Image: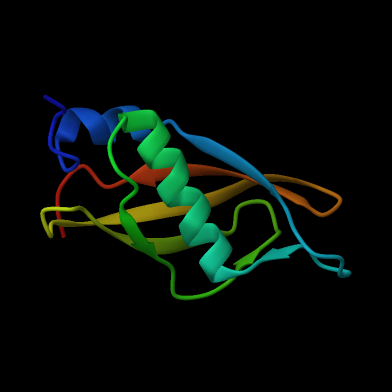
Length: 106
């Protein structure tokens, strides 16, 4: 039987997840908030082997190294966790970022 998606062990594994996405053409790389949320949810589901959680982000992610965005993850049991998305590098229109899920529920 799979562990609860909100299990701390699952989140610990997911905290190391990283993503790189291609973004639309513009002078400054930017990733739409819905694309960030979807990518974070997919990466966490893949890391934990659990269903894709509901993730929402308040704004687009600017493609500038060091930029952080705080998103909200709601697990299938209704538990909420904060998620930090931090840009680690930008190559042209590709934004690379790390994902870190808070260790405790919000």
